[in-house]
Image: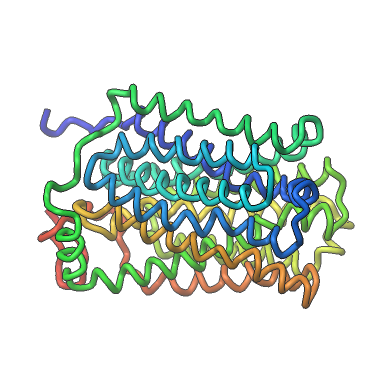
Length: 414
């Protein structure tokens, strides 16, 4: 009915939310298991760092392949397949007899995780009104801190009782989501375009301004995701080993950061819909830099004042909430015909660049101690706050389509 308000796509949101939460849980779980895995599989510290980066690196491959397939054969089938792939990766890791097999399982996990993000966000962005697109994307991305909090609970409370193999094998049951997706009649199955995919890509990158915005968006992703992964991948070790915190206190700090991130994501959607994508990204990234900088320069005095340390961890979480902006921002940058592939390529190639993040942090810690390691995400957060202004402001625009973009690559008003 013309003029009727558009209903919120609850089924699409819930499936994408739980798929994202569980795939992020699978990806970050190793941060809590890595010491036990390294001990049992006789891995060096260097090998441990590469294990952490393997899933991130492989996610770029998953994003490219799954995004392209979703545009070609339909989102529902490919989304359910990606959930099955990352669950398979968890199972391989849980059964791994050696570090080599475990590494292979992490690559399989990363491929599945990389594919799931772009498809879920693309589906949701296309199904909600422009005025609430930022809030919808932020609510979907909030599955990320839910996944990390779940990983923290499992890592601190379940792991000591059942061991890392049982934890990883149990994590593989998220494949049941794939079965639910295949059975659902609510998830879209239509293809974005019937033309050959390479022809569509060539046309997209002949659109004036589009290659430049792809590069700019990719670098924004490198900076922001680098901030996140260079901090959170090592945070459990920083707290328990570097700062000599008990299991109970480490768990409390980690959950505090994730509660803050959940709040940051939900508020980010409101701020970005009202003030714009660029001001929101910049403000939240500066908050992240301030919190990480405080930890890097004054973590010992802060530990003597638990209430202040709690505030810093909460601020770190809230600032990290700007990752919630990528779903709406990338959907608004790319035309419908190649949106799945372009979103997947941008976000997951940026995430695959994080293959080096654990290695860089390990080198910084070896050279300058705990403060040196925390300086890495601090610098990257400041880079995010500055670089976002290179991109166009896309708040509230219609989603672009081929032939409906001006010479600057901005969607034309309808």
